Image (cartoon, rainbow, N blue to C red; front, side, top):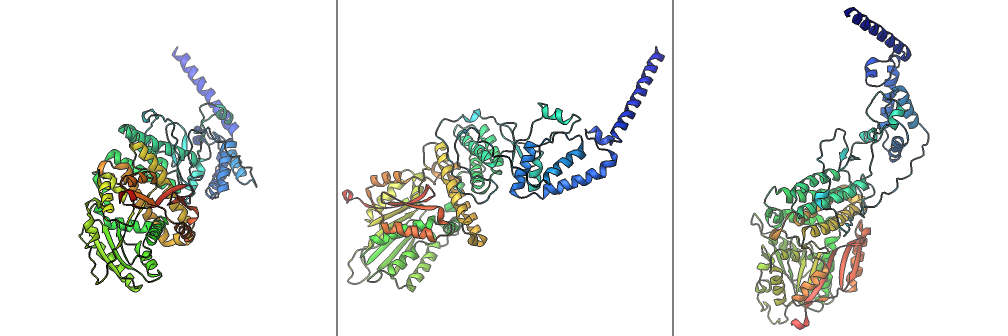
Length: 605
């Protein structure tokens, strides 16, 4: 029996050797190592195939134009490149398609069934965005724990991520890697091209545009905010990681604003430091805050609009007065007042006597920054021959001030002068901070009413970041700051000359300025959440209860504010609107800030 088994083995070996000889004869000397991997390359063709692969590498690497992207997408979707067992023929096919004179590009893909409506940038790779407003619907959403969450591991191929499914998305690879990714090819096997095309196991790579990934980004942001509101920290932790990765697929304003919201959500979830440090940056680092404020002043017309419209209302209220007094609740660098001094100097009949009281936060190094601002304004007033007096008050809160502190001595220090001072109170982005302390706003409005001012000018953000629930505040903030970041992008892109130097720096620092506000709105609660912006309708109710009535801002202010925007580089997207006697500055159709004027109601006198 042993002998019979040995003869059978020898016969099988002999037959196997004959089969190998026939295969070698048919394949004409196919390389055995590559054949084991499923590639049929004759040894005599190795040099030629290597040269063709090098040509293909150069053709793919040099394709950087937009139409090359469309060409590669066409090759990936319409041509069959699965399992190229005959490498030589496969390379020839791709090279011939690259060298074709004109390939018809595929039609744009049909829009998928709309899940929710969002206005997102059309091209995530473009840095100059248009409008990045996010319109989140008010309909019911899936609860945060219903989202299918998967941990994100470091992708094996640069630029591929997975979010809630097996679909792969392009993030932001280099131009060379991006074009490689768009050529669909399955893992090499020994099956034929026809088998690979018909096999259900072969799944082509789906390349999703940045608009769809942008929608997923907004969905992830809203789901994370909902998880935070429900105190579902496990879901929030997974979602904030998804947001960080999804944000890299966006460009321009959307990527930046998503990054700041992701950071704010992470701070709220992980609490890396005491929350009080996030909101008290204005007191702890006022010099840095003032520096950011100045860059924001230079980068966009928002503060210029606020100062100009408030000054115009004050100037009209001071008509015919010989002694005027302005109390500024946020002195900072005093950027608002040189223009008013100059307008008073040109008034018919000569300028009045001007007294300015500035209020600012304490400095950590105990320096007298307010006094330095006063010296500069005094020097400017002297050059234009305006009688100027100045007094600065350091206060941690406006609620700590009393009327007698601000008005000073009632008697005049000039012989024979009996005319009382006409008082104006000015607040630019200051009153909303008082809402963090119960009764603080009512105390300050009572102090203003006791000063008997002719006019009170108030400039506030036209937004509602003081809602009852966290999700409501988060949604409103996402709307508002998406528009703010988009307006910064639009201003710099429309003024390339300015953007080349200080313009880009001003924009970057302005983004930090807005990012600190986002962090306070999202990451802080209680008294630490000081960025409690409210819309004009809510301020009307508050001011009315405190005994004030609105003063219409004249049509001259509207016309001159429109001229100001026309002179501002990149101001094409900004709009001025007059509504119920107040002036609103907006970016396209979304309002950003509102200037309103008030006086003591006649019934309260």
